[in-house]
Image (cartoon, rainbow, N blue to C red; front, side, top):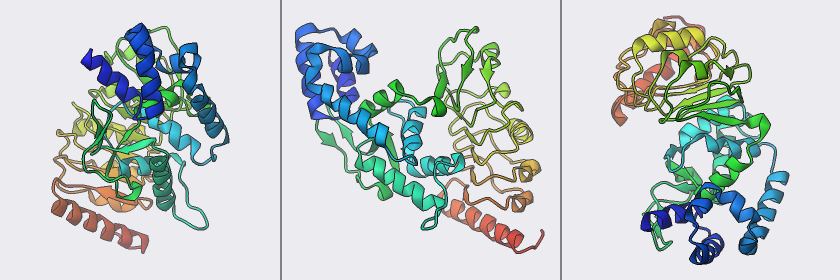
Amino acid sequence: MIKQSKLMLNKCGGLPKVIVAIGRFLAKSLNWEAMNTNFIHQLENNPELASIHSLFSWLDSYFHNCPDELKPCIFYLSIFPRHHGIRRRRLVRRWIAEGYSRDTDGNLAEVNGENYFSRLVNLSMLTDAERGVNAAGEVTGTGTSTGRKMAMCNVNDFFREYIVSRRMEENHVFALEGRCSQTTRRTGRHLVIDQSWDGDENVFNRIEFSRLRSVTVFGPWKPFLASDKMRVLRVLDLEGTEGLTDYDIKNIVKRLPRLKFLSLRKCKNIFRLPKSLGRLRQLQTLDVRHTAVARLPTTVVKLQKLQYVRAGNTPAVSHVALLAVTLSALRCLAGSRI
């Protein structure tokens, strides 16, 4: 009962009105399973929860009138699993690679992305990962709630449930998890490989790759996950992926030449990046932090669109690596060759 209560409290996202309504409802029915599996549907349609129906009217109105530049950033949050800590910089750099945050007359894309992040924090859709909610509904931890200072965030559980229930077709996020049917044709812009997926290659080959813009892997790596049919793929996020090797990186570079964002962060079996890395002419973000990579190939100077690099295992090493790459990139842009 305590475990179920905590789960339900998390799903309420710390919203007092929702907590009270669900508490009263469950005190009468004790139908935890129905509430857990059909959370948003129950909240919207159950007449015994009429006290919070107006909340959904407001949410629907907000999303209908939401600024065009912010809406895809909101729906993008459903890529990340529940309670998964997300670094602010990771999210902003992904938005930039996707084209959701662009340069404008007044600001660079990165500044706009940081502004979008702060707006989502102000709307309580993103919360500080260093802060939490205990069983009494009290905020715990010492983290800041200021978007620009928030290094690590979580997606508010309530808003995540809402977002998942209303995924936009043009920004469709779909996941491979558990044991998937081989007969289902899967399509969308953002593919998530869940830790629970059984790795069936036949299921993977049923995916429609023509619209795929990002692949995010939370489970172990499979060589077939990098397909040359992913012709418009811009983001490959392999942070913490197990089983990835140097040989796999060569194949990734060969098959996915249009990447703008590549993260190998925390992939422990990556020791060296291939010289062919220079083929990724569109690459903007490269993250090899907390890998065994000690130096970057000289061909990195060919990456004239490279804006953001993270390398090394300590702040000092990361700073040196970043400085070296920045100087090389500047030489390249000035017309020098190494």
